[in-house]
Amino acid sequence: MSRDDAPDAQDTFLEEAITLNDALKLSGLAGTGGQAKLLIQSGQVTVNGETETRRKRKLREGDVVRVGEEEFVLELDGEEDLGEEDL
Image 1 (tube, rainbow, N blue to C red):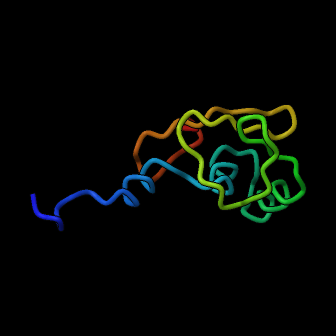
Image 2 (cartoon, rainbow, N blue to C red):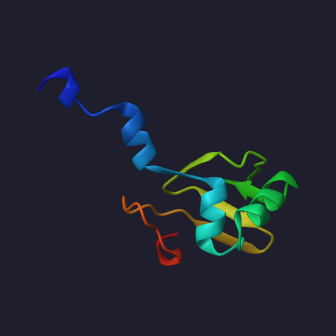
Image 3 (spheres, rainbow, N blue to C red):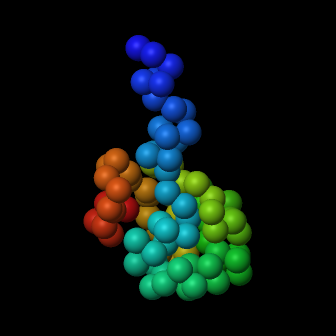
């Protein structure tokens, strides 16, 4: 296998991660990117029990995201187009 054919670690990471902002939108906990931004920046979102204020925080499968009383465990199936049932 040539160097050009080897998988790039960055590409693998990107396929296995989603931003917090996008996860909130796809899960339905935020209706828009603007709403997700406000929730995150106001300190209302936790990831794995820790308050998270970075919108671009990369989430990985198994991360637990909580907004108020709503919580979900992130599940990635490798598909580009994730629906609410996938989160």
